[in-house]
Image (cartoon, rainbow, N blue to C red; front, side, top):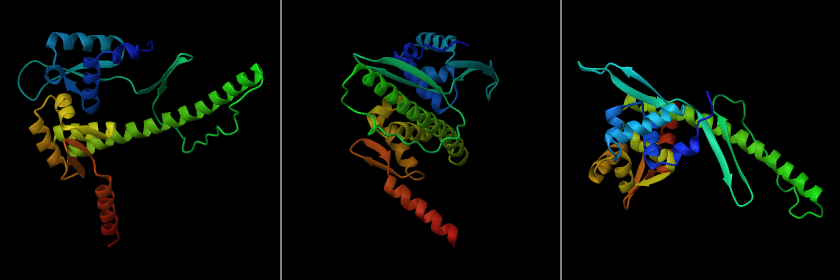
Length: 236
């Protein structure tokens, strides 16, 4: 299969929104259509484009009720894409995610001079910087592989123990972006702001959140306190 035109795919907001929903869970067509503010015809077009590019795959599955099988979609690749665009550099690379035996990276830019007396020195420094960049990319590949695996485990555990898909969608989003406004989540999840707030308050019972001035984020201090309490309980 050829490399997907990922920048073309990501250049459209509707396609980005569809991908965001699909990273939370596999979705059937009508569910996806309900989550974006465009017509079902437009959604079908965007899904077809992403399937053609190899970003998505679809399959049919019987629903819980009598009726025709539903068409489901999920993401068909596991890659990280890196790009640099400046007046002097344009390059990009896709990094496959998986299992990588990589734990530590040592980056040393101090040994590479900032000033140069000759063209040869400049070329040599550029090559040395590229070598340091390769170390960073290897580290990124390993980190993203572990984050991907852990997010999968978080989704499975949350649905098994709590079972609320909307709460999971909020948790999933704020884990990825750090923090989000209620308005932003309302637009992302296609819910009323009041509904987002209620679901966030329910989520706070399981995962400590800071819900303040219309913004939601993980309360890392309370999270660490809870983890400390679990450790103390385990020692008793």
